[in-house]
Length: 466
Picture 1 (cartoon, one colour):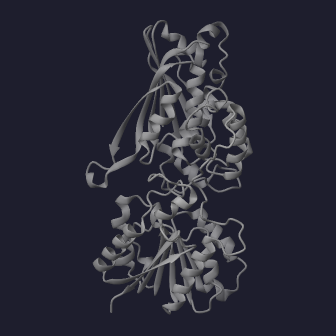
Picture 2 (tube, rainbow, N blue to C red):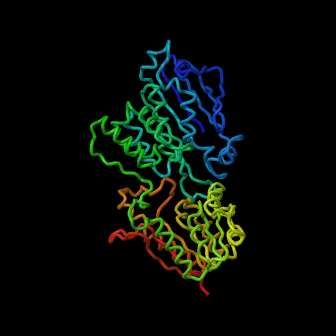
Picture 3 (cartoon, helix red, strand yellow):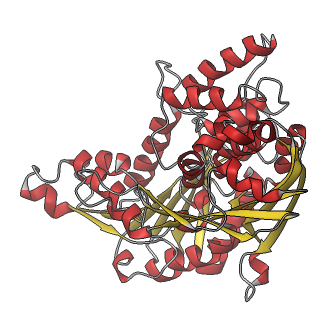
């Protein structure tokens, strides 16, 4: 992760005074999960650049720090050590904290002045939302430029990468630039490395007090910064509304929609899991495997059904598997239960002999988390290599999103979704996949039905042709 800040004009070496970092002495700062380095690639009277480089330890993220009781923050395979994320925001606050306050002692007049500044953020996750870069940064007085990349030069058909190299430039105070970056980098990344609680509301309002209340994208920024947690968003938005007399403005949140709303009837997730269990029971399967089992919610239901003599759960996250084991109470379970249940780590995009030998495999609300470029690998792993007699797959129906206030084609139900299919798109993919690998396919809808947009979840049951 690399952030550079360039000051052009006269006596630009004063940038060192404003940042409280000597241009001629590189410095190292210890972070919770790595180190931060500050150095100056160029220093002159006309142009000076300060660089903040983060070196995050990927093993530390996955395993947890030595001496701690908790597990790691992320899976072993992830992009966290290599992209600009909340780790960068944390480093900005730690390394440039005094500069963010605006205090500059002998250079106070310079600190209070708007300067010709340019910041470049390397590898900012953007997930196809490049137009948001303009709508978020331009109202703050910046000129915006970004460079996109293809996912893999050897496989151009995979399309564009989800990462961009962002450059913003304008005449702004240094303290404002740092505050903007501190808040907005996590807005685009959407995956903070720490727990988001009420203190995050205070951070957002403190660093955004001078610019956020009047920003045209304040709803978008607030929702993303607070990780789409509705209670926190409402808390922050009430105070923002009071700040600019925008009472009555509605905040659209793209998280947790369609799930439990406190109704007496079963929520969507309960209906979804029930539909899957029914499909598995109807096909007469005895040996079943949950590919992408997460924390084991569906496994916990299947264990109660004596029809299923062998139940396997696989997930890429060892932490999720640990939670699944806890939910299933495997450590205290009877021998008969432990003999029926097997949990193991694996990826649904890599061939694995352990996936084979099951009557039915199911992939529940997982496929939409894959990059489109990985779908072909997923299809081969599931339908060609594992090749169970029955495959049950569920995924969101994108058309239904309008019922959750998500009107834009780019709005997805969850921040980690890479795509969502309409009913026609899902049917097209499922029918082609079934024909390619020798399966028949039946479709069904799950959840409350809208006459125009269908139901929130769509399910396909693939049955191998005999």
